[in-house]
Image 1 (cartoon, helix red, strand yellow):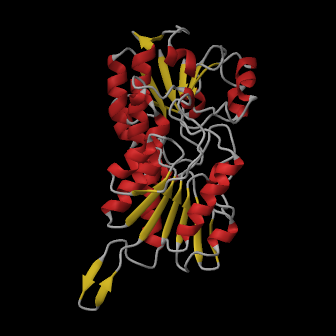
Image 2 (cartoon, helix red, strand yellow):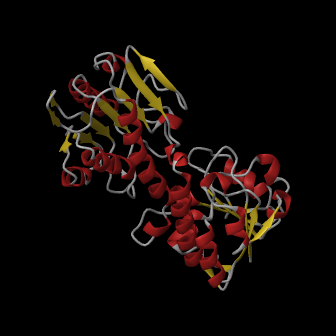
Image 3 (cartoon, one colour):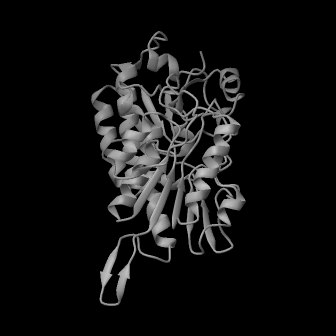
Length: 356
């Protein structure tokens, strides 16, 4: 089976790194890559030419299976042969029409964001891989914009107090943000609605902001669940009390298929000290901060608000390598001798194949 790797549109990453293609050949796949697909991720055409065939986009889209980080455009989907396999993140929880659209075109699609968050599927979890990068980069973004040090400094010119960082949401992105902020020497507090998060937060050296009354998340498969208006009000009040002293707030709270919960109202932002920074990783789903504008950096009364859910794109080489490894592990699991196993009884195959 031939895999086609097109160049991403408006994204610096590439779905397969050259090193991974070598491993895919060992399990029965051939790969055709669009010329220039890896340049923005610092992978040259010469590197790809050693392990794959290089071609123009129209030829790449004739492959038996097309893998992309972001879905192809509707116009391109209409040009693809029926029964072609597509692997991408189609986000059917957010777009309830995408499944019928793909079915109507006769395409067979696996959606990477639908892979169950189980122990066996950890090595295939592209959401966690990209969230880890986003959490790390969010702290660096905040540190670059903050007009103060992160660590405590003792100098001949006086002592500098450590920065105070609050992380809202302690999933993969939040935990990586906590760990990175701690490495830089900041004092960190964090909050999350999931019961298991308290121990993880404290194990990284941060203080846990506890709010009573969170909805049970035991059946959510590792995802956060939607909370009541009463609980969100309690959480806002507790965060507001602490935000006035914060130098940095990083928000990562999202509920799959829902608008991001609003945790930082305008009134809270206006109580923060001038020079403080908010990095909102939930910007693409509405933002955790009332003032967030997706894809923009704004200044509100001296507080910098960064709305960016695509920070993984700013580290394209490592992001591509990690995504590529997730893809290899997924293909190795769902195939044998280069052919896809369509066993819908399997949790991973049945869960991620959306055009049944």
